[in-house]
Amino acid sequence: MNKKILNNPEKVVEEMVEGMAMANPNRLKKVNGFNILIRSKKKQERVALISGGGSGHEPAHGGYVGPGMLDAALAGPVFTSPNPRSVLKAIKEVKTNEGVLLIIKNYSGDVMNFKMAAQKAQDEGIKCDYVIVNDDIAINNPEDRRGIAGTIFVHKIAGAAADAGYNLEETKEVANKAISNIKSKGVALAPCYSPGSGRPSFEIGENEMEVGLGIHGEPGVEVQELKSSREICKMITNNILEKMEYDKNSQFSLMINSLGATPLMELNVMAKDTLELLKNRGLTIYNCYVGNFMTSMEMKGASLTLFKLDEELKTLLNHPVDVSIKL
Image (cartoon, rainbow, N blue to C red; front, side, top):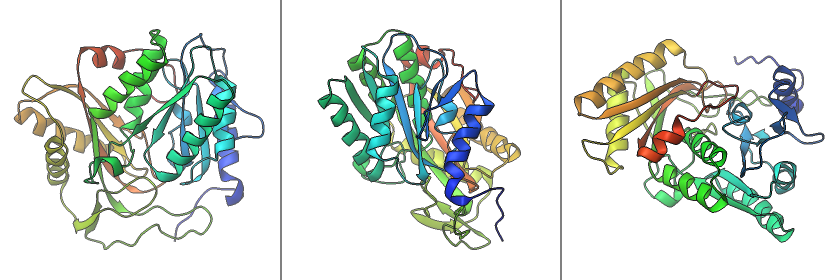
């Protein structure tokens, strides 16, 4: 049996967004009539950044609205893209003379709706562009790869670039440079459950794990026998490095991300195992993030992300932020 603390499943997204704004009044404000969070304080004149998608990935995306990162975040229905009207409203709420950059995860609904809104904004004379994040290497074809936890690094790099005075074209360029150097892959040990139906998103055996899953409750690309943390980390790390160009001088940022129900105890075991594996390969880890960054409701599992850095990306990664999540 799956239990949730809710009032009305049909209003869960609206109430969640209202709660986030009420709990963070110095940081967030809800746009009336929309499930959109924007900064509560006036921003500097810089490129404005918008991200979002279906709900169920918290703290993404509202947790990253604030100085140094996003100007607005949209929350669509659970695992469903916000509609173009909502995206256009967000664009109009935070637009500046420097323009607006949309950070889109590579899912068909998100890409279609965000791009449609960007075109409408451009038709109305608003400078607007977008980047598409596709860090999930579980999908072989790069054009079909989904955007998962690596998206948070893109928020941070683009936010720092905007704060540093990069124009719209330059912010897009450095965001795309980050995207090309970010690779992720995850495993799940148990499914998540729909707030409305209470049904599991997939079935899995007691001694099995789903490998290469997305963040919308879908199963992985394959089922394997449950392995130890060290074996899981070795498998994912090797898979990621096979998809990256690097040498012994390369430096990386590592993210160990819970899919919702994996406790910090287990995440830090995975961090230890992954850091030891990378050290044994002679690779340098510049920094490491461990926690809930992009979840799939209460799914049991985790994803690993490696972000290859150069001097520009390291400088931007170190830029201070003031958001709900420590980054």
